[in-house]
Length: 402
Ligand SMILES: Cc1ncc(COP(=O)(O)O)c(C=O)c1O
Image (cartoon, rainbow, N blue to C red; front, side, top):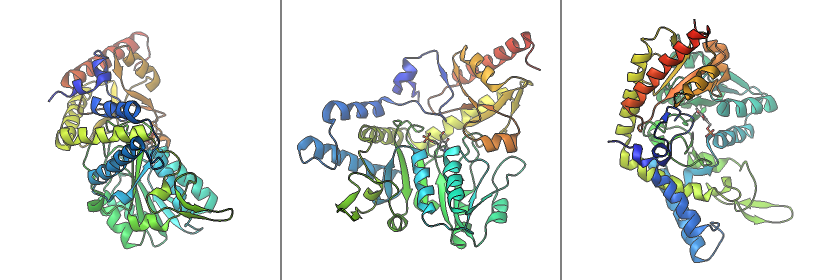
């Protein structure tokens, strides 16, 4: 199956080798068409208007909520539309900020994206609860053994990345969730890098919260999901206040709508929700088996070729990952990424919003990240590896590469 032609930005940039899907995936026509449908056929607000277009737009948004719920095996009432994974993770931290006290503990990991860690850090500084970090093993992975070392009866929340955005490693979340529940702690997973590659079943996982963004999984930018177990969402107060999330307002009081609406204040990203509908239908048509196997095999093919280049340092030499974290020895990642761009290769450089991982664990200021998705091809891999060789040759000529 060659999916490239489903993606207008790939068709319009035939020379581009796009290996930056972990930052944002390409968007298929199915997604774009639905966004366009909203603007060209509706363009109204939702939930408020009592005329045909507004009511139809509202029912498409609610249909999409149900499709998102089915997609991750949740109930519609457990799906909160947010503006992205960052927004969802901030919601979780703010919800817990309202119930945690000094002496409580929250567990997280050095692999976290800043969107997962910083809201927690701020809440802990404001409230005084303690953040404990799971130590990584020699391969920089989270293990159940190391998790057990920081779990105790004071643990109230475990905030953990499902898949690392830098290394692509999967956390042993099933066991972590089970152990956390045994001590009465709740678990919030950052699924931003997991859901683009694997079918997520929140019920089977038994996670309490799950956050993700649509733009990394062929959907629109500006739309995220916060899944929360219904009974938990019911217990928390809304974190953002504004229009449409309330029932009755007086000069001195307010009552809130029921879950999930009490968490959705203001006008939702309606066009993006339409786009998510197209995205889900598209992903269901392609199927996760194909998505996962294609990304993984292309990545492992690229890894095997990169490993033969002695000037390349690789930080995640394991099979179960769809990204390659690497550096060209002696060359700053920002110089390398610009040189690769001259060869039409799009990879990402920097600390990828995971600064703790870089400074405390990998002990380098930055890395290059090549991330693979199902619309990539073997030809992309060959062009990428050839470009890395060319770039190394160039840096050697100017005396930069070791
Ligand atoms: C693991 C992880 N968590 C959270 C985020 C934040 O997602 P967004 O920027 O879409 O809000 C990202 C984005 O790169 C990520 O990779």
